[in-house]
Amino acid sequence: MERTLVLLKPDAVRRGLVGHVLSRFEAKGLGIVAMELRTITGDQADAHYAEHVERDFYPPLREFATSGPLVALVLEGDEAIAVVRALNGATDGRQAAPGTIRGDLSLSNRENLVHASDSAESAEREIALWFPDL
Ligand code: CMP
Image 1: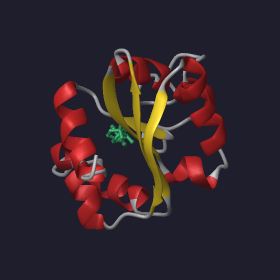
Image 2: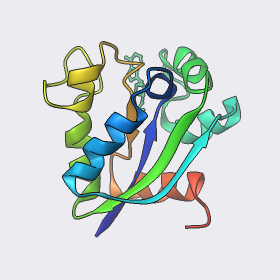
Image 3: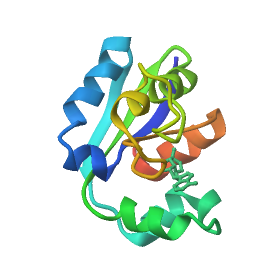
């Protein structure tokens, strides 16, 4: 069993897609270990996106990440990290394959509905950051 940190970003909440996206994860067989609606500060966005803070795309990403409530959750399942990334699809919703969450529901590489840990190391770091009690 593996765990991964997932964010349903502010666009997912604004667009009323939380239930839909969650049900895609649940239908796949992943279990919800923790889940919380949260509005994060700029400092919290910087901590989450530590590897991106120097990138050109980061200032608008920071603005977006803090623009309204998001849903943070931890999902669990066999190979959950890779499975969730496959369900999410490519970062840019315009290029993501049909059948994936971003491919079906996003037209943006910033407002791309979901975030998921990209490795075992980032899952460990991100779960500790978002859900220190786990
Ligand atoms: P996420 O999986 O949360 O990880 C980093 C995020 O940065 C990514 O999803 C996108 O929301 C955003 N992102 C990555 N590349 C770009 C880009 N070129 N332009 C704008 N946003 C980007």
